[in-house]
Image 1 (cartoon, rainbow, N blue to C red):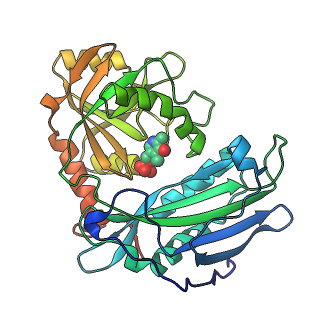
Image 2 (cartoon, rainbow, N blue to C red):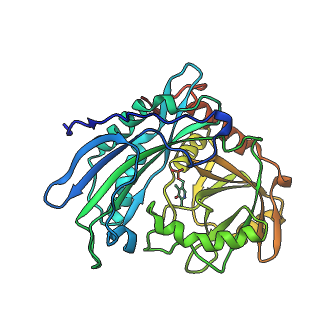
Length: 355
Ligand SMILES: *Cc1c(COP(=O)(O)O)cnc(C)c1O
């Protein structure tokens, strides 16, 4: 039995934006979940309180040595008004895995799940209704001990904030142009690429900016050692269909274990497709394209669900995929997952949790 959650309600409520005005990550709801950790006490005082800033000592460990982790998931409103979280247990498991890698003391997984369900339940009115919109849920842990020595901190804050977000594809899914980078790397074996931690994002900014200046939407990362094997696309997992084989890089520690990746692999295996989690080189991809066997390429992640790739640019060569159009498998995967999320298709796998 976990400690009960103490609730302090906001006295002034914010104005909610219209569904049509929503973007990503700019508006936050009235309340947040907060819990503290101290070495002597463990995690204590789980509470929901009005959304607002934290007092943070300028010497707080997170500000200097980046000891922090986060996760990201969504709640969806179906036509009957019900609100459901998509695979929250899986996101909690991953938050615990990320915490372990960053030497952050583990949360009680049951209490972590309860924090998400209770907060979203309280902020239900903030979940937008238009298909494509959702309530983004951001659990985060930061080290707030005021100490400049390098070692795991002795105090932390776990918090959850919520943000109503607009449709990722307001004008329909459009395949994007991706730059394959071999000058910079995102992660190396033995590093923290497999943890959802801010440093991976900080490390990716420079390459992403360069790619944007050259007219690309995102970058495709190659492995840090040989710069041969494909790792991830932007902040998404990558999948390719070559002939009748669907390939995605294995979870070797450099890439993130995406919940969408897992959902998509599960569906494709159920459909009887040939799915391989194996290393794949960029040369294999280019050769397959030349031979006319590279059928589809897409990214997977909570934000977009599925993001079709229309073109890869590698060492100045353009690899166009499926004539730059969305492939049938890419579309089917998108429709299936979105159907489960919005309750228009049956959830036979227990992926959604009603709040
Ligand atoms: C969050 C994330 C993903 C996608 O994970 P989902 O659980 O599917 O949202 C993929 N790659 C990176 C680097 C990420 O941070």
